Image (cartoon, protein in one colour):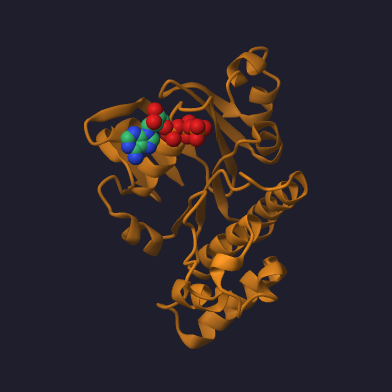
Length: 234
Ligand SMILES: Nc1ncnc2c1ncn2[C@@H]1O[C@H](COP(=O)(O)OP(=O)(O)OP(=O)(O)O)[C@@H](O)[C@H]1O
């Protein structure tokens, strides 16, 4: 679904990622692991158009999207859910969902809304509540529900369980698996809880100092003799 070719990226003149080559397979969950500051979030931002690409390419569904701005990317099936600032806190839950579906016909919006509420019943109970009053987990759910309404095919999630209790973190990862298995969504995830993320994912990349040091099956990374070494600092 995504092919990243010889990507060098960062922030303005700052270089963070070096010569990244990666494939995000359609219908699979891919985890990006690596120590703090290794460039995981920058990798996601580069794909979504929120970092500076110095050279290389990002191909999405066989189309070169390297220079396409983020709002255009949402229209072609990509959704990026950052850790914070992922919803409109001054609007109600219902208004957030309506904004997500503003380009849809009424009937289609209703169908997408029903689907999103089926996956996230927690949100259905809070439609009239202001987004700002939701818990961290509920905000994640609302952000992902909004992506579902927008008919996202690729969900890019940056630390979706950060600051959640272990129980809610497990529930969030379970929902992500459900979206992948039942709705066929492709998922690219950076997760602080790297072992748990690898357990639900198919493929994995490990970044160190802005370079890929491992790319392959998640189980291979989990069983890698150097895995614990890799993870020092995570
Ligand atoms: N907006 C920005 N402007 C300049 N530098 C940035 C910006 N965002 C991140 N960086 C720098 O880029 C480097 C990589 O950061 P990034 O957030 O991609 O790492 P990470 O692997 O996701 O880290 P963590 O696990 O701690 O979230 C860090 O040195 C960070 O300080």
